[in-house]
Length: 391
Ligand code: FAS
Ligand code: PHB
Image: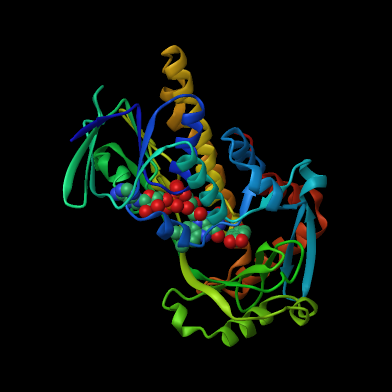
């Protein structure tokens, strides 16, 4: 059975849903193909911090009502090293801030909006294939419940994450991949406890990195750097809390409210970029094209930057036939992606313990944090990147 639409969006995560919703607001038709179910997608606990640019895109998409009510606006973050800590005043240094609102909630809001506006979301699809992307008549085929389908379209947006089909559709001879795998992961838990601090704490210690974050005043999100050979089952809640307390300043550890974990998972850390992010009428967005370590809270926010560029390019094309935006998409998106990749790598290098570090390396790391503690320019570089570079 053949369908026809203007843009086929592969992937029903935040990138695909945000793009589909923005296109809908411009009267541009799309179909979203998602491999899993809505509940499965919403069950993945991921990002927690949104740049102002991402917040504005949600407003532009008409999906910001709950976020504006429930989010936490943060004007600063805390960096700690051993028992010392200092605040970086994002608002004072950049005039901007970040918003704490979980990716799960953002994705839920987008699903609700797409469904309320009768968006075409097709779940549990299998064997998705992108055909003739390098022609003027691309098509997407897929299977669902044992039946085969085909969608003829003008364009395909590959929003299907790192393990999706879109990037693989681009011939290996036509793409260049850059990767850095970090020798550790992040063990994260969610607990229905009040956050230990009203701002996020990025903690560097001799035992490794830790992050104190939150979703709301009674839902905290904590991470500790862990070995790649660890599994969540290796860590009891008690062992997690004990290790977290040893990595954050003692005074903060004393006020930490612990409780049972309601989610526990390990994310490996890697930096990855594929170039170009376009091949004919196929455009890659988000994790389908790039991955960053979560240290700088750039994963979801860099995906949002891609969507900003691609949405505006589609809007320009369908309004005027002008392909300039589409032709510049990959170069523009990659310019911002690489700055996010650099920032995430830099913060990861400054705050984590690496197995092959020498005493000299540890001294350099400590000096970098000590310099940032008292130098406004160093703090401004972090702040500008953390609140989000301009689109
Ligand atoms: P996603 O991977 O979120 O979505 C892709 C969607 O495509 C998925 O729903 C998938 O089921 C679907 N799909 C895949 N293949 C398909 C196919 N062939 N056909 C149809 N559908 C297909 N970022 C942060 O900023 N902070 C964090 O703390 C953080 N933690 C993370 C933890 C983990 C374990 C992971 C994997 C990522 C984390 N990230 C974090 C990054 C994350 O938030 C991503 O940047 C964000 O999910 C990107 O969104 P999408 O590009 O939509 O990709
Ligand atoms: C989170 O709350 O999940 C979170 C926040 C900031 C990060 C990474 C993860 O840098």
